[in-house]
Length: 243
Length: 243
DNA sequence: CCTTCCAATTCATATATATGACTGGTTGAC
DNA sequence: GTCAACCAGTCATATATATGAATTGGAAGG
Image (cartoon, rainbow over all chains, first blue to last red; front, side, top):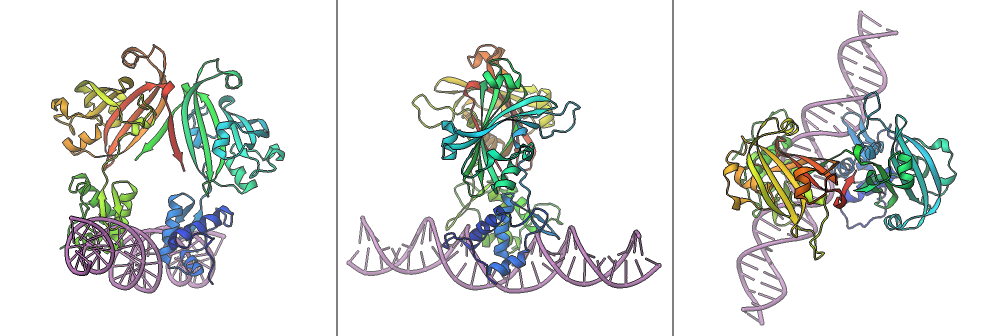
């Protein structure tokens, strides 16, 4: 039984093509996070390569955090744990001082909308759906988000039921539209509150703001979301590793 | 010919012990960045392991950016390219609009000094040497830095000749004290200018400030430097990848 | 019914080996 | 002297294989 690589330049090394092939199968949702993918031996047999080559391909995907190895049990698709990323920036805790938690989200707007220039440049299209949310911890608003996603990829997004929206968008993208966000680039800068932003965040005009602009990419490195999030600079905390 | 692993728990896999051993040899400055380290075949022979095991050990060090492979030529120690990291935050250009460059540095203070609590906590000692610098681009001050390093590791630092100081400290740490900075953790927040900081940066009192607190670690993950850097928030730009 | 033990499955480590690709220097023809 | 061809050394890819370690599920036994 010899499965095919997904079309990709066959001058590339086998382990690279296998990695791409597996990434694509993961993106298609062929495997769930609960069940192991086929064993290394099976994959080797299926794609007619050696186990070593499979291991090297899987190594890559493990490195990219798409897969997770569990010795003795198998290799599993890693649930896209893109969870609290944005909230690493605002290290807030619930009033009781407990662990950080994912803030609740209030949907303010969701509509077909022409993307502003900077979002259009990042996404490569002006035909987008705009989402505006206010995120809060313990009823205190902490982050005001404007989000743009390409209308083409997310057609039907405007008509989703409000009940489908949880506090996190990326799982929704994946479940309803098969869009798996794999990485993102965040740009941080500093600004000042005004108008709707100030009002929603309950800040004074000109209050210092931390501004985070994010472009998110799917498995194929195609940009699938642009957003700008703003929160009070006073509460801003960010930690990063440099190597 | 069988070289020894540096003492490390011999229950660990061979490739891990070899990686540690090589890391230690790199840290000792046994190889320069200009000459290749011994070939994979030679290392395999010297340590009595297979080439595959050597490759896996070297893979690790390449991943950590300690080594760099050049097909056909060899594997080289990577010059600690910790250069412009801090200045990723302040994306400033020379007045002529040219590429970013490393800012010049004016030494303001260098003396044995008791570390403030937060630095002492990071470094594990209060017995430190304090360095204060003002960094400028095209004569415009952009960053005010206070740096603490453990007096024990850097004994003699106070008596270094001023001429030894270039714009970057990490090469100096390495050349004069054998301390190789491998990674660092940066904590970002926003604050307000006052006193000496405001004066040196030529900002008004209460001007918004970006604050970066960094702890730097050597190859053995021992903290070897703590610093706090401050610059005008207005010029602050930071980009990061999330995956 | 529960615990213990065992066997199968799976990933983890390690070796040995072969071939290809790239680099840098040497050789030799002109 | 110049330049092309060659060659030796090095990392890159790929295979085959063996053994160890962790997990799981079921059989055996009380």
